[in-house]
Length: 437
Image (cartoon, rainbow, N blue to C red; front, side, top):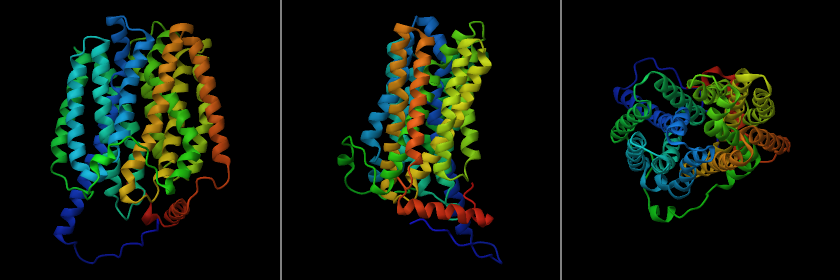
């Protein structure tokens, strides 16, 4: 049950040195886990600005590019289905250390890739590492929740991934422009970062008690406790819509830019996905005090004008419309992700956190990868322009269905969610208890 933490009494003297040390270590661990989530998602978006280079160098088709992109996402799904609850049994530290070392190895393979097969193999390894680490790092953030800031962990789980994607695509775009070996440099830097994070995790305190059942937890399954199931069903269609939109921009965004403006500089292709992820990051932060259902509803409403703007770019309005559509897609992505995570994860018991996060990400990455593969295949037969029109229509219909689900009164509102909303309003009344970092 989520309750409002009473105001801490004022202390007349300095706190105990041991208490200050534990608080500092807890804050450092929280920052490290947040940086791991951000770095993993930065690595996921780093190849996006490089796709045109790969296409030109190796003659890759749009379908091949979406397969490269989706190999990562689908492997991540498999990892979530098998290892999503592993850290609940083994502890967060061993899962994170192993996954980060695997991510570093994947970056080394990407740096040495010489064709589509090598890219796909490296992305498969990267997906396995990210899937194993994502739910463990997210659950660790919830474990480290500060009772005086009860919304901080959920906010970080929402903002760190999109901020990481924005940072990854921007860094990769800048390296394409200025680095002598852009298809190597970005991956080497990420490999070093993952190795350093793996070492740092070994010095943190374990936040989850190890218990039996680790092997049994590897059986592919989706485990969503009843307290979160209704909320996930309610907001699920909105999650599908915004992640499908994100998948289109991540895999085919650079190709769309080249179609709309053939003479645009190479960096323009990567920056279209940066526009989406940067807008998503700002939206998550801006809506941190907004009621979760209202945030998800507003995000769903933004999907249709986003799709329309992107299509206008194909009808004479050029890159400003494409970038505007991408930014509005980011607003939709950030609002829905913020609302969905808060609705789904509010007041979960510790033993349910990693598994529920895994289920949420399974839905998200399926929504991102499968439509992207379909779009790549359609582009082969009908061209990118026709495919973009069909994709926009499908996403708009999903958004309409999401709005209908969110409008149903009471659906997905559990007893715990009611208390989470009560706590939110109490925080608004008492400024000392805002759910802010």
